[in-house]
Length: 215
Image (cartoon, rainbow, N blue to C red; front, side):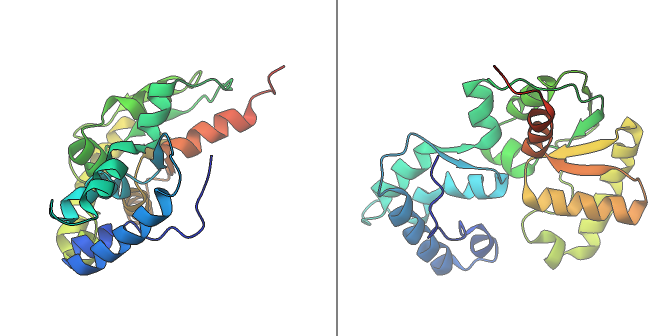
């Protein structure tokens, strides 16, 4: 695994703010950085970033030099849950007796049509009780920069989301996007639901780190 040190922001926030030239500039830099080597896959752990990266070719017209490299880049991009579920987990996982629910990130479910991959990973953890969240496909209110530009509506969506979270009686809320993580942690604080909020891979790491070493 290689983590290029000169990579930059994916450009999603610039695109959300309709700063197209800024998004294009960031994309150009990342294309130059990641296409120096022939990687089999380009992995991201933020669904919002993944949705943007998979659409890099949309930033450039077909007659621009960047269009073909952007298509090649997009074709190799995978969300970390998508990649791990397809590859299959090889590490031994320790029992985690937790009641867990999962909030679908809009950018993963609607933007990338990935629903089952994170659920496959969660169900692989021994003794973890997975409870579906009612209306998990509905936005938590983060929505890129929406919680900053439309704060009142964002908080209304969050309040409804936390009502459904509470109904699951889950100890831990899991999601797959940084914006959703921050929004749900705000929801836990505001609504005093006392749950832990984690990324899918954070929970996997906890199970792997706690497992006895394989011989």
